Image (cartoon, rainbow, N blue to C red; front, side, top):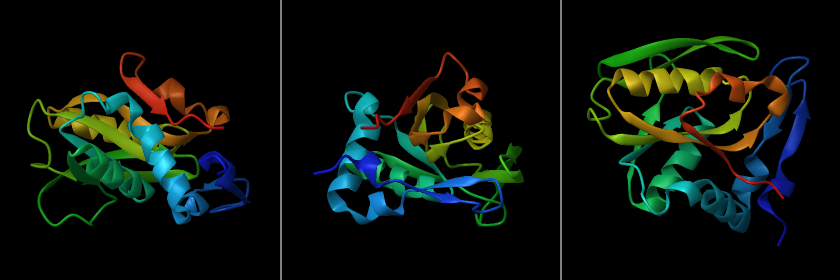
Length: 172
């Protein structure tokens, strides 16, 4: 069986010219590759799982929900604007190709609860930094973040606090 990372594909000029998009859908479509990716992402938290995995819209939902199921914890969605029905906290951030905002329900995470942030790709780090700010604004104890793929040339790791664990699933 091929390693999950061999199934990633690059799509040039998506969603805008000059961007090379990392497409994870072939990994998701292969049951063995998807299971291996989840196992690789779960490794640091297997012995002491968090109370919840916070999945960042949209592809972070896929991995966070699977991690929560695998480790028997909760899943909390961190969404783009206007998609959560109750009161929310919001945080604006810069993307590789523009600006955006993330939101989380104000009652999504009890104060002091341990959480892990989850996204598919770490690029510029803006999305993870925004999710970190939201989790901390709720009083959560952020154990770390898990991503499937890192794009080191975009400097996202530099935006992540050195004292908070950042786990990138090991590639082949």
